[in-house]
Image 1 (cartoon, rainbow, N blue to C red):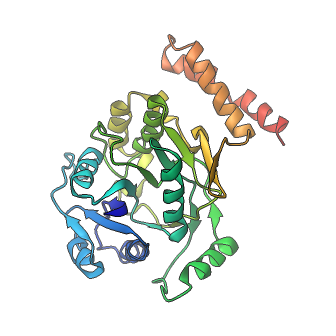
Image 2: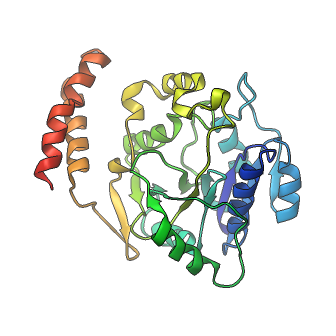
Length: 301
């Protein structure tokens, strides 16, 4: 039995740049110790990529009316075919390094119910990566010089025990909302929500949105509205990495330090709890007024 199963539903390998960054990502996963990889879907070039990299390929993923894979089906197939106690859904443009596996080991030894996530580092990678010895150090150096740490909104992976997230709604992959719901669900269930940003470098390879209709970002796509509905409404997709209950630092779990953004978020949740009976538009004006948010941010500078 392996430590961890990574699963993902890559895009078609028809666009040269998308194909390049997905190949970089999948290759990085296969180099991780004690990890297996499952690629899900029937996208063009996926079966060939899975064979090339020697990873599992499961084509029969349930899809929405537009033919886009559903998160619920992905979770079910990964759980049925995994040979590990930990699962991790990850976007196919993310490069992972050995510190990711170390973080999984550390967290597993300290908590039985949890979800692990982090902010990502954004980087332009226009060519195939050189995965020869020392590639992790070379890439880390480039990221520190040329990359940027993404704001704590949106999550590109979730790592969790096999027994968690058994009732995921039929969210559409690649659209907004489902990742926020994952954090909401973990908080609701009382699981540890662990931000490993201080200990792990997750590298996102920048790309455009040409694979989406009209090349618009995913949060403007009609399927996003359905994701929001399935999540239970706008309030349940407000959750971000700022809602983490722990951080992984030097191999140990600790409570996150209070920052202006975290204080603002805690105040928002408090106000939402008090005024839960109000319509969402009124509650939004109370819980997220821009004026007092700006004042609070100034106090913490």
